Image 1 (tube, one colour):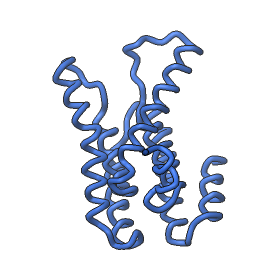
Image 2 (tube, rainbow, N blue to C red):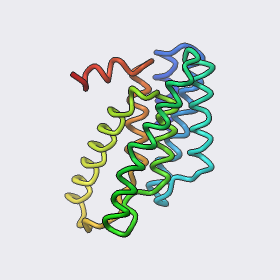
Image 3 (cartoon, helix red, strand yellow):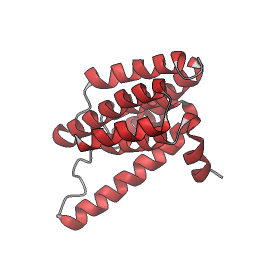
Image 4 (cartoon, rainbow, N blue to C red):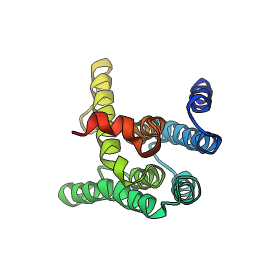
Length: 176
């Protein structure tokens, strides 16, 4: 609840009303998805798919009507996770990443646009690596233990969303 209140306060301070309410919906959904993935190890379609559609609607109605940019973001976001997921499955004969992560990445791309996808993947990967190292330091876990990626995707998405339209502040600091 406190995290949700922070979402609302930060949003109210920096955004116009359309971005504020969209940001609240995005933030609450990301928080719910992160909690579900941490507890149950799944990212349910009943949340990820409507989030994808909402991102496309946001792109058309509120983000300058640049729907093509948001469709490209959804394709790139999903593709950046689908390709390694399929490659891992082919090499190891087992899943290494759930398709819920792929759908969430597509939804994120629909919200943020294609330009933010490389940064989103980098931030989510670094967040996951840090979480794994911390978890291994605190308690002994197997290298084969499942690692939920949804919370890292959610955190990276929120960070990029907070950085504003086209994510220029954050992207400029990451990209040369």
